[in-house]
Amino acid sequence: MSNIALPRMTRWVWRLIVANSVIALLMATVLTSSRVSELLMFDPGNNPISRPWTFVTYMFIHGGLFHLLGNMVGLYFFGTAVEHRMGSRSFLLYYLYCGVGAAVFSLGLSSLGYNTPFLGSSGAVLGVALAFAMFWPDAEILVFPIPIPIKARTLVIVITGVSTFFGLIFRNSPVGNVAHLAHLGGILAGYIFFRVQAFSQRVPATPPRQVERVVMVQSSSREIDQQVAGTSRGEGRTTIDPLTVELDRVLDKINEKGISSLTVDERRFLDEVARRKQKDMH
Image (cartoon, rainbow, N blue to C red; front, top):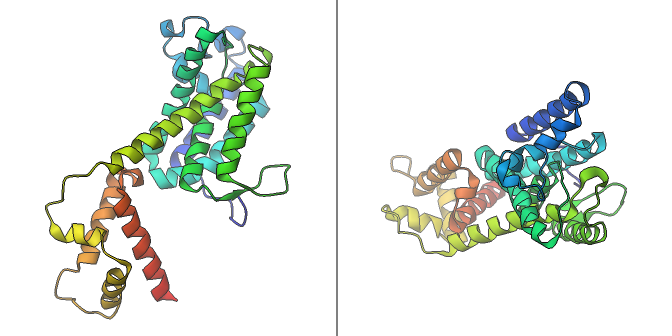
């Protein structure tokens, strides 16, 4: 990502990278039998319903060092920011959801003759990349070896197109156990997640019992300016500041349920307060 220092690894990004790396090491040194891979990989053409664990286990085994490295680099760069935004618990569930979504999608394609067994976390990682593009569509990303930064939204569109192309060209190719069309399942699962979330946020919520909270969330920029300025001058020290009350409530909600639980108005309120606080500091 351009002009941004390498981010500090978050809790579940770190744990997922460690888990994938340890499993890769074990399979390269101890569990070297091909039977192990066959038992854990996802095979849409071989009745995977009878082996339900493969909907998850396939995400944690890879076809080689470069396969593992590529997925873990993508998980690090996209996942760190997304986990910060979603919260750790929501991020982990989203990651697994996209991985399972890729498997389910490939199972649906098996009726059309796409029966390639596959392994690796590409579907889950691409779902995380989709989340990054949904949160920060205009963020510029440098993709080696291309020297020109690409916007996150454009990158996901390109990846979708490439996966579709190779999936159609190399249909049922066993090389590397790569099911390119299955990758689309991770992206599609992520897209459905955000569409459903956006729809649910448009549904009118039950009005909160405390009136001041509703007023605060919907305050105009001018009102927030006046409240922040009044707080910085020390006014109202003997009374409860409604701005602080609302801010504490929103922060508590983030700590309890993750930032993805915020409504559109709550996100707007946080952004507005942060902008005004930053303005006052300057």
